Amino acid sequence: MLCTAEAQDKFDREILGNPNQHSQFFEESLPITEVEIFQFQPSSQSVLLENGYAKYQFENSNEWPPQGIDAIPTEVSVIFTKYPKHKSFWLTDYHWLLAKRLEELFRLDSALNDTSITYNIVLQTDCDNEFEAMQLFHGIEINYRTAPIEELDETEVVHESKTKTVGSTTQSKKIKRFMARQQYYTDSTVYAVLDRHPEWQNSVMVVDWTGSMHGYGAEAVFWQAMNESKSGIEMIALFNDGDKMKNRRKQLGRTGGIYIESTNSIGKVIKLFNKVKNKGTGGDSPENDIEAIATTLNASPETDHVILIADNQSCIRDFALINCIDKPVHVVLCGTKKGINPQYVNVAWRTGGSIHTKELDLVNLQELVYKYSLIIDGVRYMRTMDDLLLPEDRFANRFGYCDRYYKAPRRKQKTRKRKEPKCYFTE
View 1 (cartoon, rainbow, N blue to C red):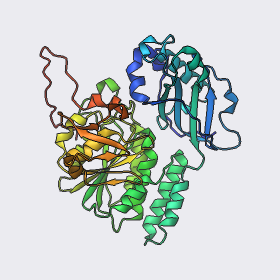
View 2 (cartoon, helix red, strand yellow):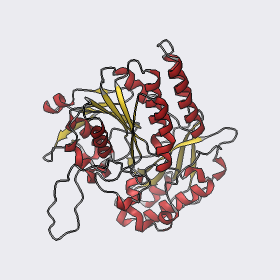
View 3 (cartoon, rainbow, N blue to C red):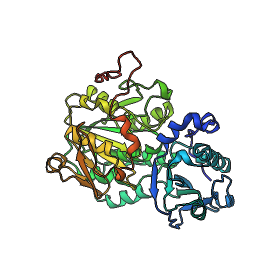
View 4 (cartoon, one colour):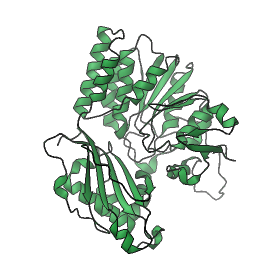
């Protein structure tokens, strides 16, 4: 099995060895999805490892890694049963069992402990007693890929009729070599969205350059290299959420890890890939999207549009600074297989921007909100007293763990009055 170069652990030994002391980290790093019964969909690119009820050792550890192929893991799901219905009544310590299962997984293959892999938890709810719970599956599902740049090759074929300069072709090859060397993958989401919106002229592109987003970010620069003559993107910013800063030290608007380069030289942008990656790949789950946008706008105040290449699975830790953004933000969401994160809907709405996925272009947010008819992927949104857009059915919001980031955290002081955060940003 091939491993990603310069990989960074997602779960360090301190966290796995003391899970109850780091319960918040687990809650933030592993989004929870509830299903009645977990249904495994057998495919050539997934492996199911079984633990058994309240156990952590694998019964079929010989099935990972798959034999005869170079498997590149992309997603890990830890499957539990929600019995009793409230975790405080569970007989087995939930965080302890989760940590033990992860330790066994990383003992099986240390390459699975990597920030580039998406982790989540699946809770099964269709059980009313312990006997029924014991009949359900408990274990880990690993999804993987075998061709990290397959889609980019297909995209190039689709767009081969477009005019290409020798320079753009050369730069695109550099990007593809970078992705092949680092084992990154893409699903053409970013390329498709940028290709549909040539009207985004005089714009800046802000790219989440943390672990799981490297493939999408490289895809964005690939599109720029292939479309320099028609692109309206003047600057590209890569942000890594703090340059390996300790999580406890991260402050609103002062986290840093934001690097900006003009698109006049795609070669310099490509060189920026490794520089920003080596300085940090994210650390904790929430990211400093708003700080990155504002810092980029400070460097390019005359721009008309912001294109945000965002990780749909991550929370925005500095959403409280949203009023600092005075240009429309067009949010391109990556990783939306399990729904849309409302935080990014709010970024687009509050800035007068839009929401985009591989198939969706939601450009009339203001009108839909006014008419109380905003429905995305079957989920209806309502406007709250706090001027937020949230799913009308709170149980439809699988990203509820991000709600804590809508307001600035309280500071430790005698008066508990919450102050509005200031718009200060690193140079």
